[in-house]
Length: 263
Length: 327
Image 1 (cartoon, one colour):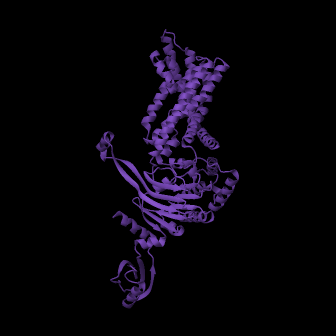
Image 2 (cartoon, rainbow over the protein chains, first blue to last red):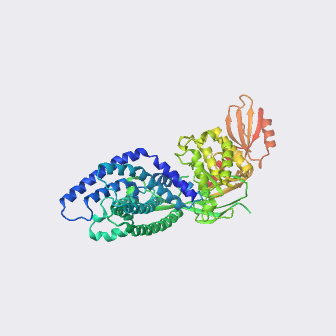
Image 3 (cartoon, each protein chain N blue to C red):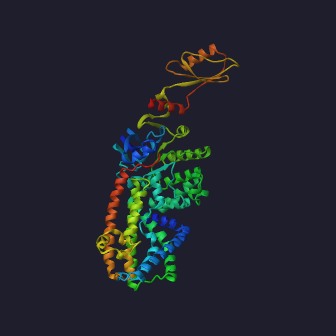
């Protein structure tokens, strides 16, 4: 256990170093957040239907999304991808570690460090300047934080499966775009899932992606009552288990056919 | 009981063939053709504890593939492989605790961490107790002169510095077996000597078993009591350096310095290797003609000032072995 924590810590600290990227990202996300807020404002003004979320809730949802943008499984650990491409993965396989767990903790670091770096300043800016609201109650906030832990583990398991696609296609961009876009769309990052048509709700609630963004956000907004966290976490845990089993199977197959690149 | 047993190991890679040119690439999108490349074609050997074995062969002969299988990274198609009684790829996590590996062309150091932090991470990963880690680090720092490097991240190091750190990294958990895959590649003469000296000491003083793959024949001559030659996936020679020379043919070389302007030397039992000024080098086969007889014949017929007999350099021996495989 200590070994995995040590690996995670090293990666986490290394990823915290990318401050320039975080500042650039902050500008970018502020911009996109504002564009989205304006679109939704126009959309709400021109519609007389009663929407499942109020405009204020949507605005908060958007800024939460921008703050936690790096939590969602898009993109893989560039360094890890590099080691698969150039064959340095050989050294990772020479360590007395369970390879899956080793890669998993690295994915956790990848999902958490950049998020941490951006989330706090983004949230502060959005609270002060752009109408982000706090959760309606302390319990809602706690439920959100609880679900966020599940979201990290879920997003990391998804990230790892994306990473492992590189064992088959070295460049891997196809799979990464496909899964990354699906994750973005079905998680609620682009459009809160409640605003999808009714016929889509069933499938959306089954897919794993809502566990990363939409479900925790609804807990934050109070749109889901705090005690709904049990269902949210159960949904996350089931998917985490499924994805870990699938990932392990994939990794075992990938390793068997692995050609360590280079001499 | 040998420490390492390899029997009839076979490993095949499947390589996608690519048609040349643009249309070839387009066709490749629809129809993929594959070709099987047999990297190892039934190799066998055993190693006793404490041996220092040179494992040599031309590029693409299967050296690294063997090392990767022994390290538990690759799974062979068939054959048997046991290291310390374990099958590397089946009991990988237990197995790797007992081996140290250096791939000379890669690094196991984290590129942006100071080396000492890479070492500490390896200590945690291998669960090395604090006291043994401290002792080992001290010893390695002294042997490899690492003190000035410990605070430097890998990305700022020269190749020679990096290699010394990589060697240390592979030994922190005190493995009884060491696989060194081209540890002297690209190093300057001084660094090469330092690395060689270190390998010798680890072998002699710690009794570590070492498999050394290299293209540098000086490494082999300086270090290895036993040499295995692999070519096209087969072990084509396994024995001492002298054995190796004998396998290829005990050709020896007679170097003759003649008087000014004496011209060339011709003998029915010898082959001229080269003539430079007054120096003539002749190859001869001691089975056909003894050195004494050849020398007496040559001195009788030509104005010889000086002469001596030498063994051909190991590179040449190896080159002939490789050539024999290719034909």
